[in-house]
Length: 263
Image (cartoon, rainbow, N blue to C red; front, side, top):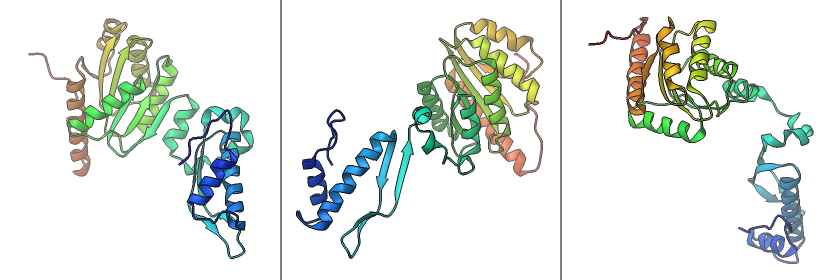
């Protein structure tokens, strides 16, 4: 392991150390070959904006050539504008369709294996939301961060993705209104529900800027949402409803949810 100063680049001493550490005898043809490979790997990493360059295995042939037999390479998406040759090789068919669609609308989406769809603003809040779902015995279906400045169109697209995902049984929306206003999210949720015919139950937790206006929009709509102020309560409801939907589907039954009358 060698820390490399990016202002200097990999030095001869460092590539010599690494080749020797890999078992090549200093002064041998293999040692010289290995040094060259190490230096070229660093050059590739820097010039092509890699975020990961992992080689396994690195092999020596009978004629003392050092060959990279296989490698895993990731590239920085933010560098696509200057790495067009690299990104032209991208095969979207090998990627999660949900992540591909989300990227088209600048949504941060990572598909997971659970059945509770999540839509949150802010990566930290998204992580906390997934954690509390797990603590309540549930399993998130995704990481979906709509960011601090999402438009109604982006919110609608987020719901389209969640609605189209067959493994999602219920959707938990957790919004803290700072930069993102709660009423914008509420309007996006309601418009999406109407436009795409949303049938999956939605639990929504809103806090922050324009939360009163958001709740008024929801109350005046004809679309049924489960609204709560508490994140833990929202997670509990999401886990419970997801389990009810799962059991109903297993029994080949359809279920509809309506709010209980206030006592």
